[in-house]
Structure formats: C-alpha cells, structure tokens
Amino acid sequence: MKVKVKLFASLAEHLPPGAANHTAELRLEEGTCVQAIIDRLGVPEPLAHLVLINGEFVPREQRPTRALAENDELAVWPPIAGG
Image (cartoon, rainbow, N blue to C red; front, side, top):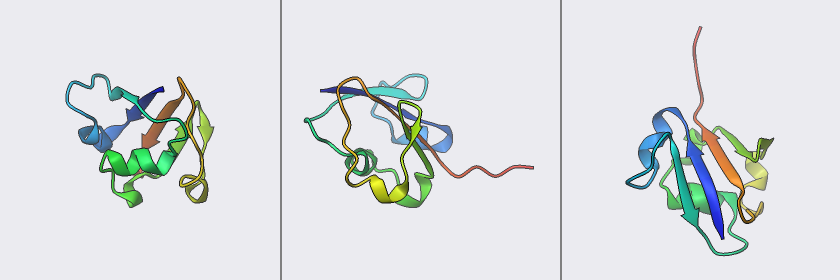
C-alpha cells in the first residue's frame, strides 16, 4: 500500500533522499502501524510529539497498534517552543 508521510521542522532530515516539501510517499505492507513508520524513518520517539493520520490526532499510546491504510497521510511534528 502507499501512504504519504510528512515530517515537519527539524524532523524533515529523517525523510528518505529525494523527498520534497517535507513529504515522502512510502510503500508499506498492509497493517503497518504508525510507530513502525516512526521507527523506520529513525525519528527519535521523544521528538514525535504531534502525530496525525489524515488530520486526526493519534495519541502516543495508540501508535504501536494504529494501522495505516492505503492513501493515508501521516504527519509528524516535533515539540515546538516559542514566545
């Protein structure tokens, strides 16, 4: 299956070569979970702060079991500080 992965801010460095606009399309096996993608891309767990599938928040405790489906869009943001 194909999914689109978007890694924002400093996380973009974990995308595969050739990724553009903080986005990469990945081919995955059916049933691949969110945490498997985060691990596969080498994103340190504490830096995967905000995770969304198709705009829907995925809590940290659901990431190991929440499976992705064909054409899903997974977006990940690091913690952001500002003032």
